[in-house]
Image (cartoon, rainbow, N blue to C red; front, side):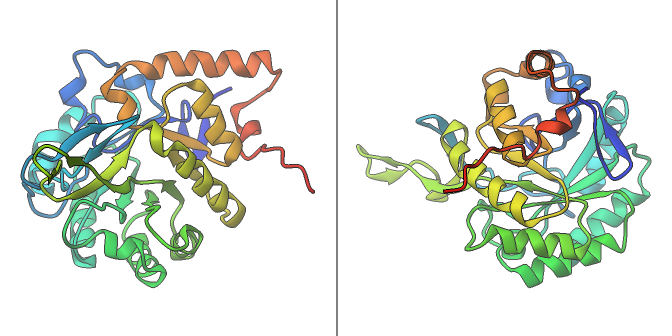
Length: 305
C-alpha cells in the first residue's frame, strides 16, 4: 500500500530523512528507529573534511530556522572508515548526500564511495546549498553546469542518482530538465530558501555569515509551488522537501506531484514522527478507498476557467 520504487529499488514507504537532520544516523540511534523510514539520506560528505562556518550558525525564527552550518563534515575517507559500518546495519535504504566545490570533488568522492564496502543504494547530489562561499550552488543555478555534473556522475555509477535543487533560481524547471537530461533518476526539492535575521539590540545579523538557509513550515508554500512546476515539466520522480510537519503536509506534497518526501526541520521537534506518519498515511488511504499511495501522486484537481 505504501511501497514505491525509484528505478528497480523498492522503498517501504515514501518518507525519507532529509540530509543533515539526523547527522550520520548513529547520533540518534538511541531514541529513533531509523528502520521505519523509507530511506535515510546522510549528512553531506565532501572529498576533504570541512569545519563549516564559525558560530553563530543556527537561529530559530517564526515557523522555522535559519542555518549556515556550511557543510561541516569529516570528509569521505573518515566517513567510509567510521560511519559506513553503522549505516550498513540499518534495515532500510541508505542514500549518501555528496557536496563539492568542483566537478572533480564530486567525482572523486563518488568514486571512493563506489569502491567502499557499503550497502547504500544511491546518491543525493547537493548542488543547492546557500551556506558556503564557493561551490555547490554554482552548479545548481546553471542548467549547463547541472547537466555536465550529472552526466559525469552518471558515467560512474548505476546506483540511484538524485539531484537536489534550489529554490533560489530563476527557473527551477530548467535545472530540473538539465538534471533529467544528464541522466538523473530523480530530483529532490526544495533546498533551503535564502534568508537572514537581525538582532535589533546589537544591530548585528544573527548569523556569522549574515545570510543562511531558511527551513521549516514557513517555506512549505514555496516548496509546493516548486513541486507543482517540476511535476508539470519532468518525467522522473520528485522527492518533496520543505516544511513537512504532519500527515496532511505529506499528502499535500504528493497530490502536488512528489512521489516521496523528506522530513527535515521537524525532526528536531519530533524525532520519532515517521512512525505516526506511516500509520496515518495507511489510515488515509483506507478511509479514501485508495488502493495504493502511488495513486495520489499528482492527483491535484485544478478547475479550468
